[in-house]
Length: 305
Image (cartoon, rainbow, N blue to C red; front, side):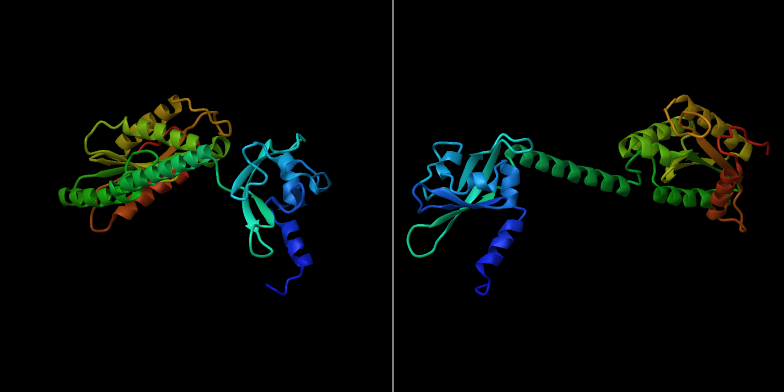
């Protein structure tokens, strides 16, 4: 440190992004001796207008006595130039060149946020904690945080349970998979919050169409929902899927980038099997996914059988 020249130290101060000035307390009157480029930018003053200027002329309040060596912060009135702040608050540190009273003030831009900014930051931090806690609780409860319906893990657990029961009783299990068409484009246009609101409306339309206590709705993927039904064949599942697709279309959620209509719509795939030793839960899911993939986008008709 002692090997640094005054020129190097001055260059460091000049390049600092923090507005800085130095006041000579021994001068008569006390005067500004140095300001860096960041101070010029914030205050609206040129260095030539400040160097040698009496310190007292810059202080906003007369209570901030220029001779008071106990000061720790002051407020300066800036030049009314375009882009300059109205006031600039500085933290003051004394600099000594020997024993006794300080020789200089080192003033740096105050970095502490205002009380209002601190309150806003604290409020946002609290809201973030509450959101994270709510999401965590919903995951523990098996619920999707955005829509409130079952999440994929809970869906797979219940599918496994129903599969075992259906295999034992030799009854059918039906699955419907719904995909929101061009949902990424919807999110790009309206943003995440609107996209979540759209998902909630679609989830409510799907779950509200189920009439039997054992039927369930889950968010299966980012843009997909699954409906699990017991004792239903492909024809019954397909008929319900068509009604649900029409119901979602009837929500009239505007979608300016939809390929076929200007509203949010869903395509769907269905499958129904009676579990036996040659089939597993993944087979039911694969069949519904293949049916979804084979169906033209925007199609609302299900082929017989």
